[in-house]
Amino acid sequence: MVASRKLRNNTRSLITRAKSGETIIITVDGEPVAELRPVDHRRRWISRDEVFANFVQADPGLRSELRLPGDSIAAHEERESNRLATRAKQARLA
Image (tube, rainbow, N blue to C red; front, side, top):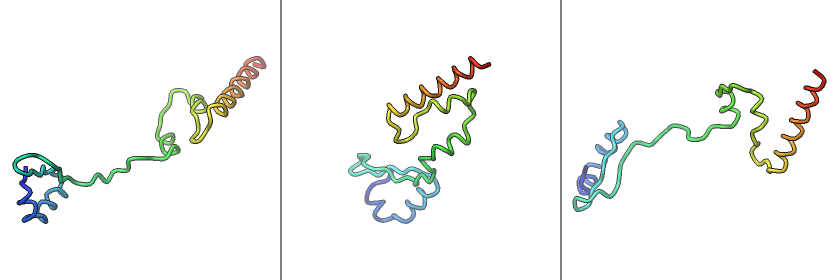
């Protein structure tokens, strides 16, 4: 924990400590009020294509059951109905 006065007087050294991975709690009158911590540089979001490129799935056929971004429920249900009808037709022909 670091008092706000020490933060004001030693800003650069405290930032260097945070940059190296330390989380520093800033206090005012002995009460914790803030954290100085390193910035998280990891990407938080990845594209749908990247997820599927790295995703091992037991049944690749399940991909078609996922809704696409911006897909309405009706469009998804229609696509799913068509997919099931195609499967049934293929099963009858087999």
